[in-house]
Length: 289
Image (tube, rainbow, N blue to C red; front, side):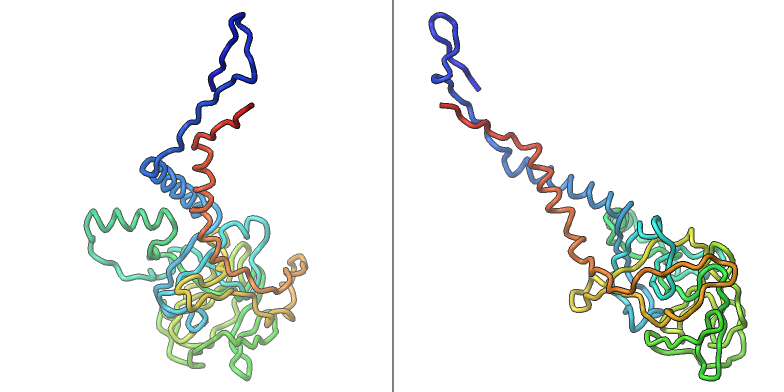
């Protein structure tokens, strides 16, 4: 803003003149917008939310191969996992790799994959798994009762989410989950007993053992892609009558409500970046008369 002075050197407010600064041109604002959006996406992916790709059929029909699920990465910082929730976790050493090893694809594909992973839309790691929580620390989990159902702390569970169950009895094969039947397992402290919804093909805690809670990345709250399969992953009520494990503090589980779809949260970085970029754009001062 330029101020004009009278002959005696005083400023006459009626004679002020304003100089408007031009907004940033599109070719300057667009890279800034994209940079801020990228940084926000990385921060959200690192600390809050991440999208995971489903590479196998171990959770069919709940999750299909090619689905992308939104994972809440902070929920278990404020509470413990609950039976029935679907979680993403890093497999312990004894868990078999989920993906077959592939030859090195080259520099450019690796760079593209790294970028996609940074913003949370990359492919799965070979030790990333997604299963359903069946047993909590201290729980006694076994199979089966007379109807072939899993028992948790002596209570048989009707599992409507199980698509194809394993045969009751098959000859054991080390490291491979073939039979539905397994001996009672007391879940160790700080660990979870996790099973897939498609038990016929799922390689899970039946043969590979429980998973440390520290390995859990977060809770899967909904399918966000493809758009035709948008759906929340709510907690089933089938575990409502299961008592707390002996010796563990009794606590009321969180109320069973549909999880928010979460798909709209994936769009947050772009509008947030646009708003942030406005802070870098010069704002013309209001003219005084």
